[in-house]
Every structure is written in C-alpha cells, then in structure tokens.
Amino acid sequence: MAKQLRWTLNRFHSKCPADLNPSPFQPQTVDRIRDFLQSHPAYQETPYHSLKQLAAHLNIHNLIIKDESLRFGLNAFKGVGGLYAMGRVVAERAGLDFSSLSFSQLLEPEARKKLGEMTFVSATDGNHGRGVAWAASELGHKCKIFMPKGSSFIRSEAIREEGAEVQITEVNYDETVRMCAEMAKENNWILIQDTSWDGYEEIPLWIMQGYSVIASELIEQFQKEQMELPTHIILQAGVGSFAASLAAYFTNMFPDHSPRIILVEPGAADCFFRSFTTHDGHMEQVNGDLATIMAGLSCGVPNPYAYRLLKNLADASFSCADSLSALGSRVLGNPIGDDDRIISGESGSIPIGLLYYLRTTEEGEEICKALSIDEQSRVLCISTEGDTDPSFYRDIVWKGYYSNLPAYSEIIK
Image (tube, rainbow, N blue to C red; front, side):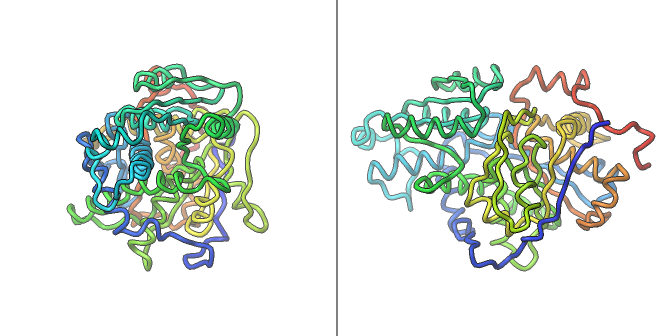
C-alpha cells in the first residue's frame, strides 16, 4: 500500500516574530471589505455544518465544516478574493474612495467613461479563474484566463461560460503564472493573481484580504450560535494565500488563544511541507508536473508574504496522497445519521480525508497525540469547492477512484 502522508511540526512557529505583519487582516479592515462584498446583490453568507455524528465517530468533541460551494453561485470560494481585488483596481483607476464604496458605484456611467474597457488576465487551475472571469463580467470588462497543462476541460468550459477567453497551456501552474505576468506587461492587461513577487504585491494582498471575509463570517456564525471556538483548523495550502489569510484573521481576533493551524497539501506539490523541514525555514519550491487530483492545490511556489505568515502561525504541515482527498469526498458525501450531506470536490475535501485518517489509523494515533487532537478537540475545516468536475467527482464517490487506503482490519476500532 502506498504511503498516505508525510508530516512535520513547524519548529519555526512563533506568535510574535519581527517579520510577522498580520495587520492587513485586522477585524475592522476585514469588516470594511465585507461591507463592500455584501453590496453585491449575489452576496450571501455560506453555511456551516456541525457534523455531530461524524465527530462522535472520530471521537472528537465537534467538527465544523463551512461549505464554500455556495459562494456567488461559483461552486468555490475564490469569488470573494477576485471581486474585492478587481473592485479595488477599478475604484482606484476611476478615482473613487473605497472607504464608503458600494459595488453599484463601480457600474455608474461616469466611472465607466473614465476607464473604458479593461482586460484582466490570470492563471488558474479552475476555481480562481472562474471567480476572476465572473468578477470581470460583473464589472463589464474583458478577461483572459490561462490554465496549466492537464487542466480539466469541464472546468475550462465553466470559465468560458462566465465570458472569458480560455487557453490551456503546455506548462505547469507556476510557469503559467509567469507567462501571464509577461503577457500582462506586454499588452497593458491587469494581472489578478493570489501569489506575489517583487513588484507585484498589492493585488495579491487584496485577494488575500477578500479571502479573510470567510473567517469573519465564521466568527459571527460561532457567536450567533454561542458555539465554542475551534481548537484546531485544517487549511488547504496551495500557494498559501487562503490559509494565511484565515490564520492571520484568527490570530488577530484571538491573540492569546488562537486555534492550532494545520496545513495540508498534495504530495506532488508540497512546498510548505518541504519548507518547514529545512534547517533554516527558507522557502522551498517544487518543480515538474505537480500532478494531483487536487488541482486547486497544484502549486509549487509559495506566495512569499503568505509563507512568512504561515511560517510563524502554522503548527504543522501535511503532505498527502490523493487517496486522502478522495476519502474526504466520500466521507462528506455519505453522512452518518442526521449529519448534513456536503458535496466537496478534490481540493475541498482533503482536510476531512486527513482528519479521518488521523483518527482511525494506528499511524494517526501518534500524530494526534503530538497535535493534541483528542476527545475534547473542536475541529474546523473549510470545504473550499463543490463538484467542480462533476463527472470526476462521481468516479471518486461512486466508483471508488483513488481508494488505496488501509484495509479495514488495519483501522483502529
């Protein structure tokens, strides 16, 4: 049987380092961003689910899943980052004050006259590109999306349906990002990417700030239901922007008792895991095809700002086999008792697949002890996408694709 995971504690973890700057994710800042997003007529809070039966099965106190498949009708969370960042770009170029801006002001004839028609461009494995294409269409501008080799045709068609021009390249995700950056410079297009480099930092930060609205919603939902805060949050890494934004927000909100942050990424693109295992914590990258069913996490180069945050805020990092993602989709799609059913795609389901494995296998037992995951734990996971490739999702759930897990006899009973 293939090895399911590798993992490491993050020995560089520190809540108060000199290079940590979580200030862009202060609650009052995020509240203003949320006000802007709420002014869009399609904005709705995404729901959370307390899976009590599954929590009991895993012998933990509570398990909360926030379902981002319902975000803006896009079947994934990315729209919050893309809409906010593009809204900021349009507002600044039109000379509008963002402090009291609503979405409808961006569509007023005077603003459109100042701007003309702009072209936005982005690299994507699917969800980010669909969010960018949708936001560009909502704002009345052009969009060009480039996808890495091996990308899903179904996901590319979903992006085209949002009005964008789409092309699948012959290189991996990180090379596609570099290609888009060059084309944006040559053609005076506007690059909308959630990873940064020297000279390209403002827009990625805006995208991250948009993502942090998810954490803001969660805190409000916890407070409304008088629920205890999670003790552990398992977050998908990718380039790290999503995980870093939520980790920074929770740290700002609860500096003295913030939850433990656990990162999870595919074994074929485990740049955070590799970075945390270096002797000095320098940022590692992964080259090659980065082939994984977790397309949204198939990224070999971290966002440097996100990496600085997570190097200090994350407690551990996991590099996981694709079979754990498939396991998560099956677990969430086949609930126990009266638990809610959640349709979670390959990048959305990996936190649950990991948690299930940790709580039901001999290997996981020792890891849980190291991370203090026990019967008192309250675990939060974000299902970042639904069945963005419905046919492949059915193959996983119905046909058992990627099911090379331990036999039942090896599972702890």
